[in-house]
Image (tube, rainbow, N blue to C red; front, side, top):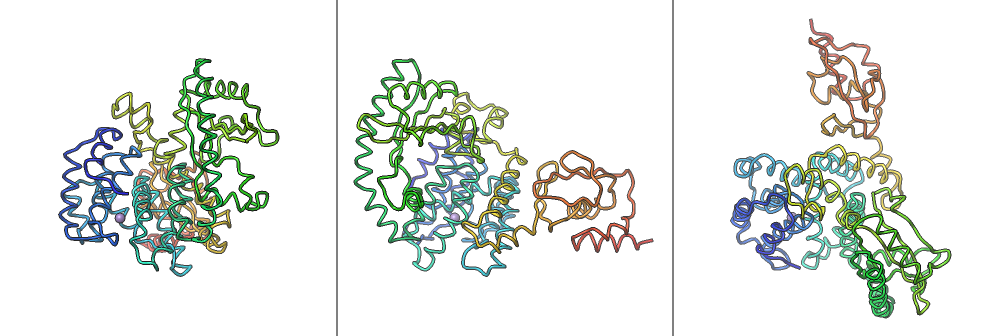
Amino acid sequence: MSVSLDELISESKEKVILFNEDRLLRAFNFAARKHLGQVRQTGEPYISHVINVAYFLASWGVDQASIEAALLHDTPDMSKVAIEELREQFGDDVADLIDGVTRVGKVQLRGSHDSEFLENLRRMFVSMAQDIRVVLIRLADRLHNVATLEGVALSKQKRIALETLEVYAPLAERLGMGKLKGELEDLAFPYIFPEEYEWVMEVARPHFKYSEINVSDIIQKIRQQLVKQGVKAKVEGRPKRKYSLYKKLLRPEINRDINLIHDLMAVRVITTDTTSCYSALGIIHQYWKPAPNLGISDFIAQPKPNGYRSIHTKVFDNKGNIVEIQIRSEEMHQQAEYGAAAHFAYAQAKMSGASGEKLKKGLAFKIDDKLAWVKQLVSWQQMVSNSSESFHQFKLDALAHHIYVFSPNGDVYDLPENSTPVDFAFGVHSDLGQYIHTAMVNSRVVSLDTPLKSGDVVEIHKTKNKKKPNRGWLTFVKTAKARSEIKKLSAEK
Ligand code: MN
């Protein structure tokens, strides 16, 4: 796939709040000059890659700076452009994003030694936690790279595909970006398990064809009934993703039998609000009986941990087939597809005076709710640490020896396990270590030797005047920095 500059501009006009075409063109022209003559392994000019990356970000409704940064993101590595030059030309916000993206980009997760892998994963978390837009740009970059893998050397293909499946897809899922997660997995799948991929395609083909015809019939009938009862909704079919189908086929109770899979083609009903979801459910159940034992899952009443909301019901259609129907409001739908991007959207959009239409679509993007984002990141890290599914256990144990804590304005600090507020203070600035009055963790006053946990928000209340650190702190501090500063400063006259 490949989009043009014009398509990028029209997508941005539609979805990006306060879109500035002149600024986009300035970034584009700069990138085009720097990438002049550079060609991708697919044979396309290099600039097509960055246009595509910027396009994904526009389609997610991310902000102007991210789109400019996406256009420029490969100029430091490919063309040796200094971040300082980008800063002069495009300002701090854009330059900081490119800097973050470049640093995360150097992180190679696969094919490195285990100790390196860990260090890299850790570094990736920290850079990503600084600004959610950095991770969104990296995800968009990865999406385009894996979509154009056929142009990459065979030896590199598998590494990129595996990294996509093991790191980037779970990250997208964690951010609630269901659409992106599915796309990344499906693109990586054939490179990692080529034979299994062929097999899935082969067994699924006739079933997909049948469900497609069957489902379009059901869609018609649901539409008629909803109109009759005055429920406004969009009704559409969605084919199951290949990789998710493959994983389901491997479940013991399915045992590779495609006849046991009922959601090859699901029906999706998208209503205007929550109440209409339940009205739609009632109407559907009047015409099609829910399948016993498979029944209903109400993720509106009980959302999944990543925030996913929807009602899933499995019903018998008129031919006795089991069909899955998913019911959700437009807002829930945006959240399920774009997750973090949609989730952070509303307040920022409102603040910037976005048009009512964009607000309704939930496409504008909120960038300054840092704390909410880093909390999500931490819970992802904990989830990864607790699962042995896609990572080797020992890697995770080592990962668990680090904690990530936050300042009240959302800056992230990476500390060794059992670090204390004193370690945090010296980590922020050695000066702050000389002004410690009291420490607050998650808005509660704590003693200075309290071990911190990932996700804690730590605040140091300062004394009026500078004072010498207490040598007694040496008994509990964990970081080398705090230790040496305390020794040095307490010895001073
Ligand atoms: Mn790139």
